[in-house]
Length: 125
Image (cartoon, rainbow, N blue to C red; front, top):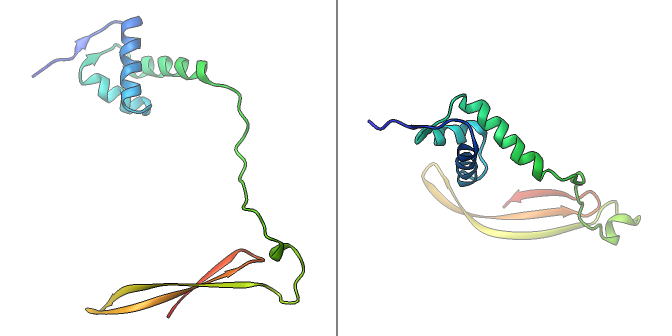
């Protein structure tokens, strides 16, 4: 049975933790600690990882704008008042093979797109 190497706090374990953290694609503290613990033992490991990883992340934190949800461009059909209540576009796709009680059957689907409300309705034919 292999025993992990005991390493005191300092610059070397900090570099080891950083290497494992990046190798694990910036995983959480617990996952990084599990991987480090297989080879090395650092006293008060989880708290050491929390502090070293939080220091690493605090340096890289840059004030950034909040993400805003971008909506798709709205066509003129949906913004202007129509004689029709809604404009509808229809697409067909298929065939789709459906197995029901051991019987395989072929079905097509009609996709109704309502321009004004951006709603979609699927009808199996």
